[in-house]
Image (cartoon, rainbow, N blue to C red; front, side, top):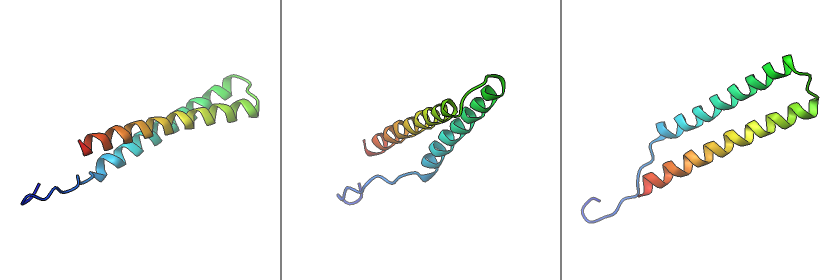
Amino acid sequence: MKNGIILPAQRNHLKGMLTILKSLGMLIFLLFLIFCLSLFVSLSLMELRLLMVISFAVCFYRYLVHNAVYIQAETN
């Protein structure tokens, strides 16, 4: 608040980038685990695709939750 004017909260872009990097790091880790699993267990192509889609969905959900919590914290 400056001279009676309420200014919008400024967003810290570094925190947003860290959230994205954490989600991408988790996605890469999960894909690596799926790759290692496929070396030892015979999985069909459909099962591999399903595991990759699930891991992407988990990371995307995690990114959305972190981003929503961050935005809510910035606006309060």
